[in-house]
Length: 215
Ligand SMILES: Cc1cc2nc3c(=O)[nH]c(=O)nc-3n(C[C@H](O)[C@H](O)[C@H](O)COP(=O)(O)O)c2cc1C
Image 1: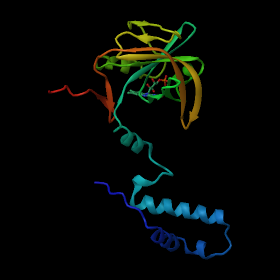
Image 2 (image 1 turned 45 degrees about the vertical axis):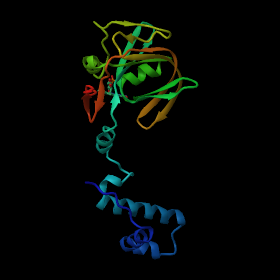
Image 3 (image 1 turned 180 degrees about the vertical axis):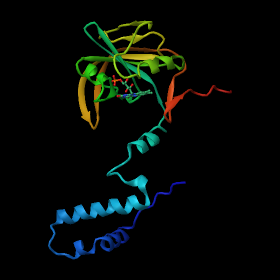
Image 4 (image 1 turned 90 degrees about the horizontal axis):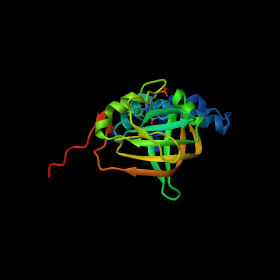
């Protein structure tokens, strides 16, 4: 089991001195330079003993593994530009605000989906039911997305609303915020609905479902 350990500030300073004595004894360096050395040493000290704690170079695989424990639902975020429809499987979504009614969709910037959402003024979030795993797979492939054979309607914005979804919200994009390798699209909900089906879940890098209630 991983135990989280912290260096006491004085022990930490001693270890910094031990590892870089010439730097700290030299009266010359500016405060900024000393702080940089301290941060550098802190990184080395922590990473040597507790690699899971270094934030300077936190491993993306570790982030995936850890955040994968945060179970989510699965959506297909869809959009439309003229006659062109687009969909992308997404679980980096959340309900953001009730007043005004806002939702958040995070899209990685290096794919075609990003271009599609950036060039559109709307999106819909289609919350998938446990029966729609194949739909999730279909919209998780790279490149142009294929709606053929899928029933869908439109509501206010024209973004595709998938039939048989567990729930949906139709939104106009009111803000886009850059964040690392993703952009956050904030949508104001114009219409929506939900059913009582079972949800499709995503957990630890794979699909999952709610346990049937045994009572
Ligand atoms: C369960 C699941 C959830 C996903 N969630 C997101 C997400 O929230 N944001 C995102 O950018 N990509 C997400 N993806 C990956 C995209 O669906 C995938 O990269 C995209 O469809 C690839 O197409 P593109 O490169 O043409 O844009 C997810 C994939 C799966 C299977």
